[in-house]
Length: 389
Length: 170
Image 1 (cartoon, each protein chain N blue to C red):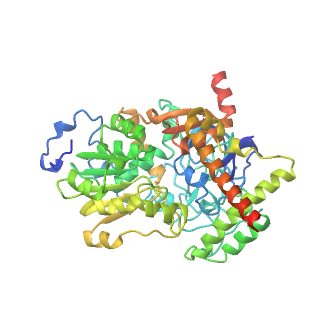
Image 2 (image 1 turned 90 degrees about the vertical axis):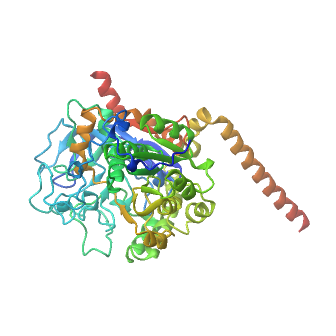
């Protein structure tokens, strides 16, 4: 089969690879119909995630058709069109029993701090991802969700990570009616966090970034205020001025370890690797939120350490909330929102690219060329299927 | 123009009428992630027992912060070569020890060189520029590409000149 193949920082190609097989009785093999490139895939692409091995296939946002099931699978059948949450989880461990599916303790041997994730290095379990024609889907009885007939497949693929992560980012902010919410990052997660903040009853939503075309998009799509941080001398002062001197009620980090905007953070975090990425946005969140406010973090950081102003967080009495999204628990409600017309996720898709052109798609997304916001890779088997239909 | 009025003070929901779905999940009971830890889990088909053990047919490292390998695990790209030995060494240390992560990052860089060696041994010369998305760069950022080429050429030119001058003096 064809599969994306990581060759080192900034280098990927698509080449033949052995098709996956059933390795556990509760596995399924899924023929991929759509696979997105996620912003967090770029951390792998840039060589920042430890234990990212040459030959790995990325891709944790995908949909597909069930081709084969293991002997113990009871809740899926061959031919089902499924969306597959990016978390690989067992549904039975201490954490899954509490609906903390992203923290599953039974699917990632290599680390305890994170559960299994498709195509996200051996630090997240060593599973191949969905940027391929076929993919192994472990714990098939609990993970995949059959796509409802009235749900657009493009909406479905965005329910595997981007929309639930944006929603959970806003949800962890514990937003009350009328709250002012500042979201750092106007990528797909930040865009969905902005839309979700309104669903949760925010009074003001402000999105901060420096990429002008993304700010223009989110301003229209999420009807929010925008700030280009290149026009701002000091982010905390600017947010205070916008909020009557108090600070925002909720600040959300949708950027993570590759933030720009602070030279010292970039040098120590991104180039010298003296910390686990640039903590620029963590600084902005802690220093821009009001006393007693909430900082919600879904941006991805490395496993070592970051220098953040924890003293300010203590003195301000902040609540810090963070986690990978537990996609499965959000799906029923988020599907309702789409079906009710409250949100149209597929509007953020700017590029649909054949899987064979993954190298160009990664570069396009990484360098923010051609006004790219979200890229979907279509494997040749899926293209043929669409033609036949 | 910047606003300075805190919206909480107004309390007029009509101002959000233009926002589709505003407040649909204002009630915390509508929020799927509330409370953070929720029992029993609302899975459609909750498993009755922990998963059975996946057969271990390849080398899979496990964190020393857990007693044994997990019931389910990935088998992609088993460790091999020099990078594999470095990774094995890394897994003697816990996730709490930065040496664990630095060794893994170092192994990744070694692994990249091994990948190029594997390509060449199998008669495949990697198209490095193609793998880095040169087609997209030329199509969507030709000016930027020209600038990168010019800067790189200048840096290499100056370096060559300085090396040549040092050799002449020696």
